[in-house]
Amino acid sequence: MTAADLLDRAQRTAEPVPQLSLPDVAAAYQVQHAVIALRLGRGEVLVGAKLGFTSKAKMAQMGVDDVIAGQLTDAMRFSDGGDVPLAELIHPRIEPEIAFRLGPGLVPDAVAPALEIIDSRYVDFRFSLPDVIADNTSAAAFAVGAWQVLPPDLGNRAVVLEAGGAVAETGSTAAILGQPLRALAALGRLARQHAIPVRPGDVVLAGAATAAIGFTAGVYTVRVAGLGTVTVRGTRG
Ligand code: OOG
Ligand code: MG
Image 1: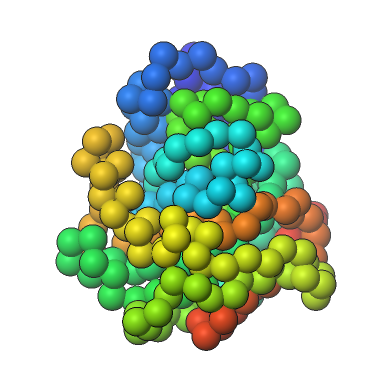
Image 2 (image 1 turned 90 degrees about the vertical axis):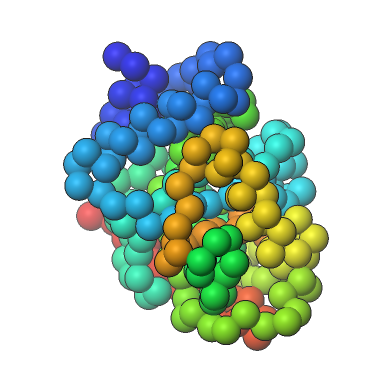
């Protein structure tokens, strides 16, 4: 079985696999492309891309030190207020993000508060940088709040992640590469180097502003000052 088959089966069966031993980041993106090809072969459609490790909080939490990119399909997209079934996930975590919607080129035409549910397909949520790239950067699910016109000052807005109505993590959009718009430049570089598709209309998750927390049954809300909120609910059974 190929690395892509192993990761794909881990995702579909919610059974984690041991870490891989990939030679480098370029080989890891090849595995990511193969994982995405399996999903597209089952009828999923690409809807965008995501950045990972754009904040120091995330790099420190996961013990890695470079920005990475992954790909988002329609099967990962949940509506604001939607239910996310826990049975399909291994050991999910949730994190607060900013989403951009791309116009032509890598220029955003809208922004929204967002949340991402990550779920490493590796045992104990432990991985090297190539491992997590091959695993499509732990992408599992995401939700985006109401799109709005890009404000001139996106660089220092308070970000709050609430779990069950209580504040769980707080941060700032400044944690995302100093200013979340920089995530788009990082995506441009990674897209060129590793053939990640980016097209007008795509959603781009800029990367978490705080560390991730465990995602279990209940309601989770992300609030970004001046941009509004987005909510999902983890459900059992
Ligand atoms: C990898 C995904 C990182 C982010 O926002 O930094 C990421 C992981 O933490 O498992 O999505
Ligand atoms: Mg993320």
